[in-house]
Image (tube, rainbow, N blue to C red; front, side, top):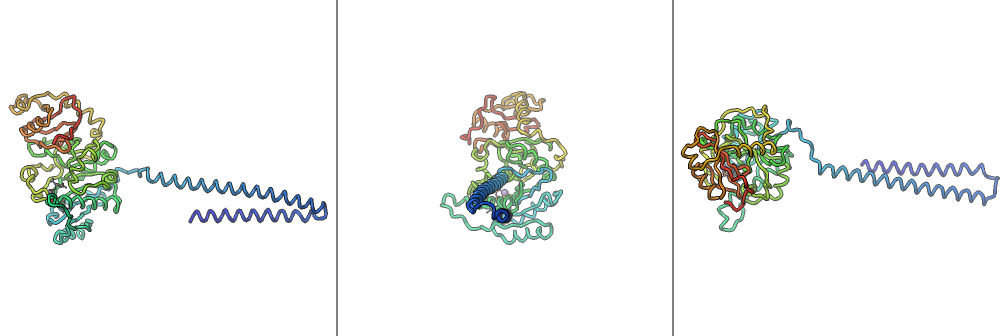
Length: 435
Ligand code: UD1
Ligand code: MN
């Protein structure tokens, strides 16, 4: 519309100018009648016309230049729009909670706690995304829509996924991966949020759940070597954590189970999101790209989902012993910049380096039990596994990374002592073949 206007104005000026020149020529000539021959008059007229023509072409050239300049400016604006991120106001950031639900009416338990501890409904809108089309569960969620302004969105595709026989038993993993993709696209593309906190329908949360994510968001946003903040410590059983609820760490292992990411991460992951096993896929180097997550010493979520897609075995053996933090730590009032890569790496490397080394047998026998912290080295996969088993921590790897590890070091409590299960100083990085 603005362009058309401009062209019209220019055409009008052009025509007016021509008319004016014509008028001047004609009004000049009558004075000349009688003086000079017709030939002279004609010659004069010819000269005038020539001048007029050259002025016209000059004007045209200027018009063309003007048009090109405007087009270039427009292009520039468009390029600018797509490459420069809109500056975020980290203090005013809206952190929606995306609650992934399916067919368990116990989603109410998760929702009750999410509502109970929520300090601000505008900063933390709750979006329940429901898969599975389960009517009783939908009815339960609907109550929260009416009473608490929770948003209820439903995954439109609940069809079975056709799988060949050996994969058939993984149907659940395929469905939930498909659901995650759809739900995250809703959060970032339909509702245009800048970040998200993802929880599942069988998670309890701690009183400082929101405080933890609010305070760590600016760190996540500023540090490109971080790609998530998680509420989860994979070695978070009661006897394996200290009482210090303030302790936070970096980890190379993607923990999930109540986690936050930014839109930029989704723009990267969304287009190549896998058909199944999304969390292990995220742990693969092709996705992780060396990035870490922030995790707490004491978990800010715990799961009550005995029966799940992964069949509950893990629940009875491990998950039900995870300690959920019950204190409120005012994280937003604290300086958490020590979690930024440069500061943290320098501090953590020095700390581990200076911790006295013992063998696993010595640690178990209580040698040096007067010391606050001990270091145990591992050089092979077998060594790691055997030590982990003896001390009761998780002994598995995903893409070569042990759970909880940062720069190869797994930190946990053992009979009241801090243990760093650490690779030797000449460590070359994770070996994806360790499994
Ligand atoms: C485990 C993980 C979970 C992860 C999943 C995929 C634990 C404690 N949980 O799930 O974080 O996402 O593996 O690797 O380790 N769901 C759907 N559609 C379905 C089935 C389930 O959306 O068809 C939803 C559920 O509502 C739930 C989530 O997927 O929010 C996980 O399902 P669940 O049955 O709890 O499986 P887990 O074995 O706990
Ligand atoms: Mn579960």
